[in-house]
Length: 329
Ligand SMILES: [Zn+2]
Image 1 (tube, rainbow, N blue to C red):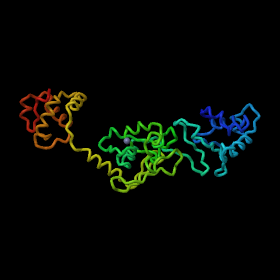
Image 2: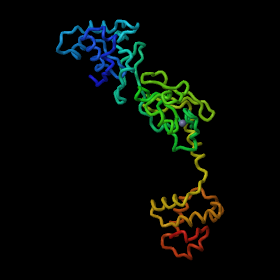
Image 3: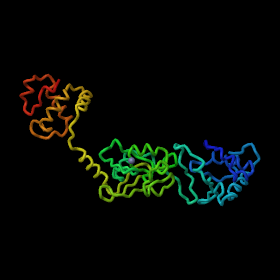
Image 4: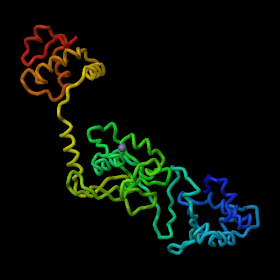
């Protein structure tokens, strides 16, 4: 299936191309439309002739041979013809330099000269994101910003952007702050004055690098992101880490008036937010029994359900463990 490709003005000024006959130049441009996302295609002269020159008597095999000859100016040819497991293929050289395939285009299924089959992981899921954040210790790999306490600033970055054929493998994913991520956009770190994290960065097809071996919270863990996006952890330590995160997240944080108001509005509770907060603030967020308040929403629910359903003011005031009735409007 043919694809839409770029034809840059330089094509007409390239002096290496100028050495070739007209039809070979046109055939070369025709190959781009047949090639896959990685610039590879099957080496079948008769089929290529039918695809590129259906109405002309052109010797496609001769064209391919000429394109596979080293250029005059350098030792490199325009295309590399090779064989893997008895099948013949073509790699268009300097592909990335001249073509920018759409990121939605399917990855190549044609092996490289080295026999590697191109592959890519699916777009990172929330689970994958969390793994990468943990691997990077919640730190922006570009500016070093600590993001553990600022989850709204954390995001996932493709080290080699998808627009530049960067993969979805974990080796190409980095924790970043939103500022660095926005700065990078569709560029490489070096292009915007940042530095690529050491040892990371992979393009689609670098199948051998889809493992992450790292230490999470000081314990060695092997995290593997499978082709289908599933996460396999070495020994279930990830679950443990999630539990710990939950525990750590529990310390009580007093709400603001706005938070209480919004919550009550959402639930349809008629609670005076300001008075609610003042009541508990005086007691340093301990309830009438002297127990620390762990969940202010729960307090609103219990207080509201106890007192707001038609009970009298006296009843409310006399109830043991009572909250003052006057924060019910
Ligand atoms: Zn940053």
